[in-house]
Amino acid sequence: MRRTTRFTLLFMTLVLIAACKKEKPETKARAFFSEFKSDFLDDYWQHFPESATLNGYHAYDSELRIPDDSSRRKTRDFALSVLEKLNSVDAGLLDPQARTDYFLIRNEMQSLLWYTDTLKPWAWQPSSYNPAALIGYMLRGRYEPLADRLAHILDRLEKVPAYYEAARANISKPSKPHTQMARVITDGMIELLEKELPDSLQLAGLFGSNEQEIIGQALEASRAFRSWLGRLEEKGTFRNFRLGEALYERKFHFDLQSDYNPESLWEAAQYEKEEAHTQILRLTQKLWPRYFNETRHSYSLAESARLIDRIAQSHRPADSFLSAIRQQLPELIDFIREKDLLFIDPEKPLKVRVAPKYLRGIAIASISAPGPYDKYENTWYNVSPIWEMDADVAESYLREYNDYMMQILNIHEAIPGHYVQLVHANESPDPVKSIFGSSSMIEGWACYAERMMLEEGWGNNSPELWLMYYKWYLRIIGNSIIDIGVHTRGWDKDRVLRFLSEEAFQERSEAEGKWRRVQRSSVQLCSYFDGLIEILDLRDEIRSIEGEAFDLKRFNEKFLSYGSVPVKYIRKLMLEELEKNLPEDHSSDSLKR
Image (tube, rainbow, N blue to C red; front, side):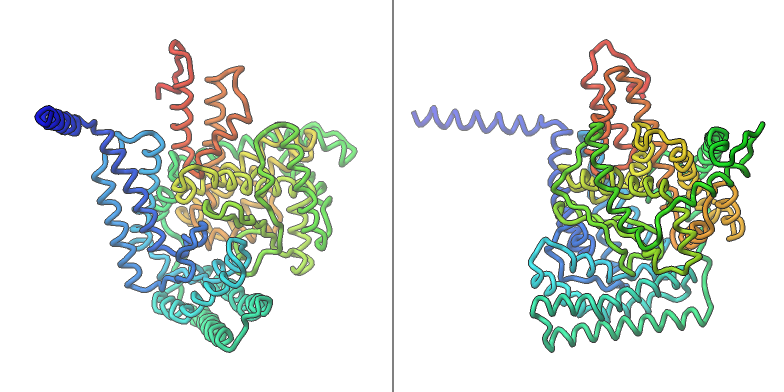
């Protein structure tokens, strides 16, 4: 009996050894990558505690990275180590979902190295130093009791003097626009430390001498940084904010992860600009008699500009702009449910608020969304206070965001735009696809949502709304044109303003704001048009394959199920899944590509 048992054990051992030797390469690759990804995220949060907090991973809430040489060396070493591990894996052996994660992580690490060693925004963009945004996020969170959140905030604040000291040491020759923006951001930090944080500490019964000392030191450091920024401006020694063609192309590659490049996107934008002008002229011919009580034999863009200007007079007063936004959001939800366009989770709250100062300086409205580990936190719809602006500036903004444009703004920023997309992204089973997504997918979805809502009948096919939509579409197209034009083709302010006002029909305030924005950012303005045309092409592609079986809701929800993955990867994932579900005799040129 013992001899039989020993023989059996020996036989089983030999079988297992043989099985291990015959283990398929893809099995080993997939097991390795699965273990790697779990370890990678733990290491990533440790290296980037601010990102951890913003994504809802709160193990490092007390940490604030000091942006000095030592920190950059650690970033460089971390990225190189991750890339070395990735290079040991054949991505072709991974399943489609894991392969997408592989490319997302690789792009993030390559991007980190390029930003750290080549672009170096830490050396010339003072606006990149913004501890207030994270503190504000923690202060308004619901993930922990207020007292616990305040304890973590105070731990971070103790490091603020060293943080600003490192920032001053880093910056030698900044750009003027980023210095001006930094002043606004730092004003927001000072306001938060003077008012909002002490009020919260009082509410929690924690505003003792130790807390006052910590806030006092952080406030002193913030004011000193603000004064230093003022001296930089007075000194007037600035570098050019423009990236130039070579840097711009690499940033475009890393930031958008698109099948387009700057040149091909420029060409597509020029073509779509002409198409939009054609639609605007058609709508001008239809609407002109209604507003001017006359019929013309021909119409030019000059008549379109007059008509848009007339319609723009229909807008809310400045003091009711915020309330009008709040009132419209439930109507958008009802429409989506009635048309069954996609699922909107009623348990994920959206709150409209006045944009804090540290979030101003880029756009009139924005979304602050929770990360995948904090999916039940509030999403904030930030609206800049038009009612606080000078009367002529406020009127210009109100005409730009008139009764029709406000609807498109709300669709874009909130429902079913950014708010809905980011809620869906947080439901992705793999956080990598939400954490390391593409701004092109995120902005592209919001732009796609505008087009989809109007196509499905929002606004009862009002020609005024469609006219304003095409004006908005020209803004999307124009974003790419001016961004590429300014950063790679030397466009100056006059050319930008002339293009935006004469060819995109934008109000002076909006055009001036866009000029400020294109100086303070780069490539991001391309993400709207790039993402939109990629999504529309994908929808048309799948519709042509499925024919009468195409279902818009199914497309929308499947597209959103992949987190914030670049559209080129979503396309591949959706087409691969579609191929599996097609009959064997079904052939398609799209699926063969």
